Image (cartoon, rainbow, N blue to C red):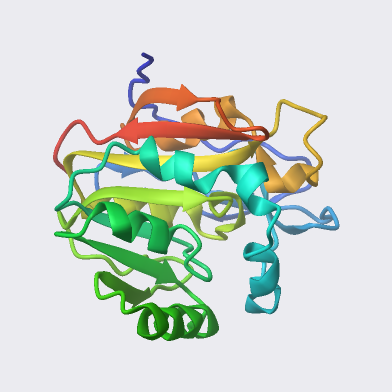
Length: 245
């Protein structure tokens, strides 16, 4: 088991970059964003703690999210089984997309619910259609924004992000909102393709190293509880909220 103390971080210099903003927000110190004159082809040209943020996958790729091969690649049933959820837990699926994980999680929390958060109304519409078709009543679609998951404070027991965090163009604000929504003892499950592994067949900006994720979560004093590496290509990293805001 690993733990990470809260970090107080300054701006990381990038040659030729322009400082966008830096200001304290609540209990966490905002490291700020930077932009560079040149960007990578799959990045937006905006940097957070030295990491360029990647483009977002649009709703046009919803069919790819439900591809048959994803079962072997991402082992979703094993992922949700390893979340250790109670029947009455409230779980936020951040960047829920077409609900690939939301519907699996909903089966494990029959007395709780899943808050399927997405910024694309088309994705939430897909989830609503599937809810009606399958008679699922414990999934609630939540329209978030690029800088706010739109979750009430102290309202969730867990949050999961699967291949989504690296695309957040306001990662500080999003984790701040998720952290505020978590109850003390609540956990964040963050799945990302392993950036340390060149053999993982994913573009570099769509992968993250464990070190980078731990650094970014540490801004909020979230405790790095564990990393489960049973997946073929991804880290499953677990962070726990150990104190009230």
